[in-house]
Length: 335
Ligand code: NDP
Image 1 (cartoon, rainbow, N blue to C red):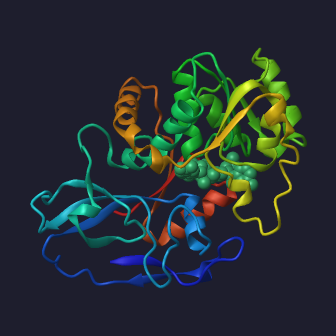
Image 2 (cartoon, rainbow, N blue to C red):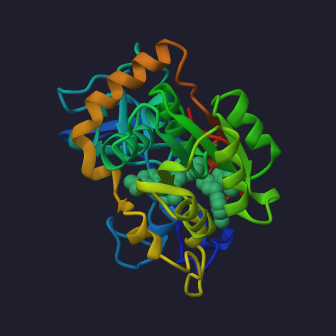
């Protein structure tokens, strides 16, 4: 089985030399262990954080060891009575083709309800991230005007659809005309901003708020930070709620961040801004899964995905997150 190991900790943007693809034998599973062949793995920006050894909410990846990440696989051999060959299982043991693990590292997934990769996308942590941020952190209400940054990305594309399905007006921001076309045509947002084509994001957001007949934004779902956060502060209505999901514009920055310059509007507009981590909201998982499955079956939840084929393409998939090459959830088909 081939796996991707971290060889050294990247400084700034990761480069190919920070990683190695290694062939690893997978012996028959030991007592209580299950052997799994991965069918799909996903990559996400949070993995960049785990490549560094700075203290965070999850421990860093170990060097000279396969990295970790969400994966969906199929049980091949099982020495745990809770699992049988052919079972579909979720694990955090991505970045490898196959592995042995104790049954406690695996969770069953329903093969009939959804296609396997959906459990890495809208019916997985990506869906939960969007759902918890909007429903619990931002306390989304029908009729709200919602601004979503990195709107064509994995979390963003689901956030747009949840808000739309709940009767909100949605303004999405993404980089490039292909992505704004996707926001209009597939996600059916009310307005889309190509932030790479806009010299002044705050002016662009003001224009789109006006165009959809809104007074400002009630909810900001932040994936990006920086200029996007500044623009959202400027266009916020009084008592707006900001769910801070991520700040990808800052992850590879080596100097001190320069935006937002001014947080005074938090006070003058009585904005509530809260960061959150989806893992703290696992109690919403069952509710999220039920609503996502229902929306999907009603044709109201498109599974937006960019698929790369084979473990050897996994790093290309990862670079794509930072270059903006990918639309929706970025996954690698391993099976
Ligand atoms: P995405 O699929 O959204 O990929 C990242 C996207 O970010 C790219 O496609 C790119 O789109 C955009 N981007 C990259 N650099 C910049 C930049 N400098 N300025 C503006 N946009 C940029 O990834 P995810 O959906 O997995 O993650 C989205 C965010 O959510 C991240 O910030 C991530 O860290 C966070 N996250 C937080 C979680 C939590 O529990 N709080 C859980 C999971 C994710 P474009 O071409 O439009 O620029």
